[in-house]
Image (tube, rainbow, N blue to C red; front, side):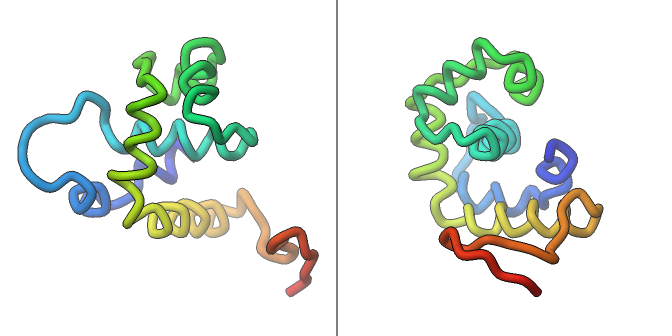
Length: 115
């Protein structure tokens, strides 16, 4: 997942960050943390912020930075809202291409389907 996000085109994030200046946290780092949290069924911004402070894989993905829950929530609900689908699709495609996941079986809304 780390490699998948690193390979994303920076233009995706540039669209979410118009204007100049430097952001406190790199958008790719925040994306990694949020995607990894989702894979662990952690959806609350407060809980994600807590795991970044306490759980080693989250610390590693965050580069030992500690974004607070407001930053995480603002990032996913405001900054990335328009490009989130593109990001998830790109990561999913990378995982499938690299054979980390199989597309033989998949679940949509709890319904089992076969290809």
